[in-house]
Length: 198
Image 1 (cartoon, rainbow, N blue to C red):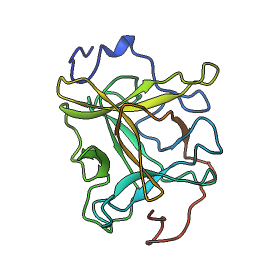
Image 2: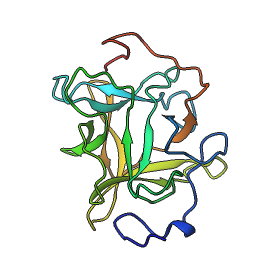
Image 3: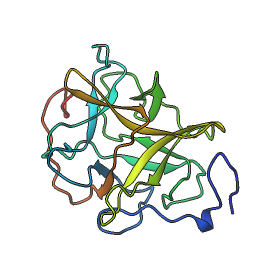
Image 4: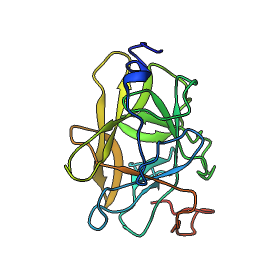
């Protein structure tokens, strides 16, 4: 039973995060992070150039096309003891198939308020969480937040520049759902090795 305030509340009182099929998110599986409603909300998550124009470090961006699932991600509980991803507990997020054009590790981090690759992972101080975000009462959805030490967790939202939607710390979170990548039809464009770089 974990009561470490940096990792979250006790595990036995926290609900598991579920995917679009109603199944618990597993640390051993990969998932597409998608909008709850397709269309003007765009598609999944991928990699983008640095907001100042350089490629490295890669930034995490939202695809403008609802035909693109984006890159699958892994959610890894920081406690190391859980195989199920639970709400409001510390997790690492990574793109296991990210191209290694940059030297960055594929683990997410916050850099200058933006979500980028290059995180170390395993830190109980800097960690992401998945929380409920009931923007649509009849459609279960979640939001991603970032927590640092004992400070208030901040929402992950969108910062748009030059037509590219970057994931960044924001007062307004984006609503997301999780689709198991195994067996899903994956639509991607072949650029920069395997994936489009926005």
